[in-house]
Image 1 (cartoon, helix red, strand yellow):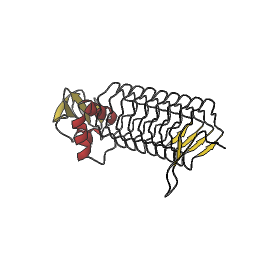
Image 2 (cartoon, helix red, strand yellow):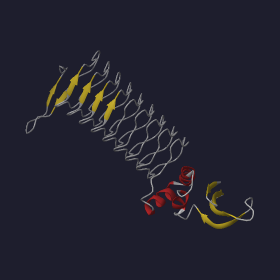
Image 3 (tube, helix red, strand yellow):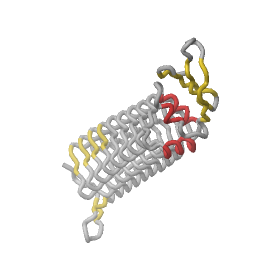
Image 4 (cartoon, helix red, strand yellow):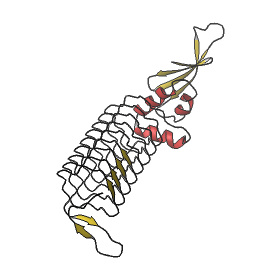
Length: 273
């Protein structure tokens, strides 16, 4: 039960009760209204007037993605606050979590397939083992997030900030990482086949034993990065900028360089600065 002046919000089963405390006896109360939070989308608007609104929002999300999405559609001005929430193994497939505050949230093993997380704050979140196939995370903040062993195939990570994130052994095959910031990121053993890293900035990161076959690295920057035993076979590398890389045991066969109005040229073992 949450207080707001003379009123309280009380969750009761699938309902929310708005309670007024009587002046004569503060220990008693009368129910002013009763709202079905499963069917009435105004619950978010009501809950945000009270302290602890995040708890009501979490409860609404747990009631089902369809109800949650409908509420967001009817109240687009409301920004979800799910910071520090426990959503471990939650089924959030196709959930609209765009712009949500999910910092330090536990999403371990959660189903986020085709979810909209664009512009969301996922800094420090635990997404280890989560399924984010086809999810939209464009412009999201994943600094310090744990995505170890996560399934991220064909997800959209364009313009995402990954500073100090853990993507060890994550499956990023076919993912869009264009213009992403990958500073001090652990990508050891990650699957980046067919990934789009166009204009991505990779600095101080560990991509040892990563599989980047057929990835697009056009105009990318790779600086002070460990690429030991990584596989770059068939990568597109035109206009890539590299500096201070560890290339021990790297497979650089059949690198593709696209030249405007000319056929693509393939080379092996490109020299780097």
